[in-house]
Image 1: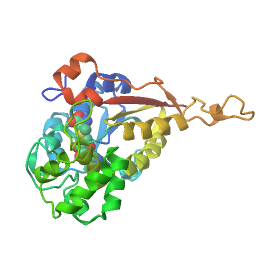
Image 2: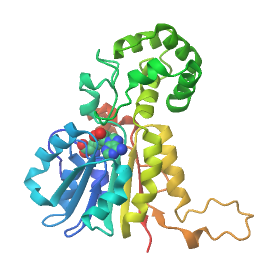
Image 3: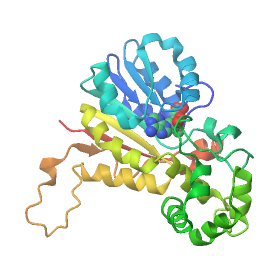
Length: 308
Ligand SMILES: C[S@@+](CC[C@H](N)C(=O)[O-])C[C@H]1O[C@@H](n2cnc3c(N)ncnc32)[C@H](O)[C@@H]1O
């Protein structure tokens, strides 16, 4: 089964993981262009329902067009996935059978120069998923103290030359465009092993900070586990190690995979387990998918099933 043009990352794997069925209720908490949502609705025909969330009105518009053939089976809301519990309450959905979180930004957002996510285009330094939120990348770059900026680059970008980059940024303020920032960073860093652009880590760090990505993931995971019906599944795709580590640790902490040291005498992890992990390791895209879509390269999928 295909999702039409622009097949999303790990599409088959998501559909296999969720095993959508008629009458099921599903949430795509990061709707994007609606590719995964399309597959879930198709596989749960004729009467499965899907709630799709996104904070980006452009994404919602595209998804609404794509999912129009499913009529009222697709319920789309402009809302952050951090409000998942509230969104489900509004619909009167006590429990759901599957939830997808495809974290990070979409190709559509990355490839739209005006969104300011990419150093490959020259555009205002924006990087907001939600264009109505006040905080932009330009604000962070031009107002944070040098030490705070270095800390941000180190923590969210794992940029080894964080202090040097922060110093260069502080010296060149005000910085208003993506190209200006990319050139300033490139002048004081190198591209690293994988020949990525020298500004990759800086751009990643700013995007994570602008959109509070890690805090949001931390906020949604417990809500997602709580919302699942017994046997329901949560599938999370992460694109960078910070995010994946967070997902891995959280899912392990609520799973039946005990992480207590063997000498621990009173371990009762199994009794408190809320989920079973489908695999101990993340699933990765196959060679064929990476050849077709090189951006899929860093995707990692983890799936957990709610225990009774
Ligand atoms: C990788 S894309 C999802 C692509 C989607 N799976 C598809 O099939 O097209 C991630 C989406 O999550 C959205 N997003 C980011 N943070 C969000 C949040 N806190 N709440 C809801 N959506 C969010 C982004 O705007 C983006 O559209």
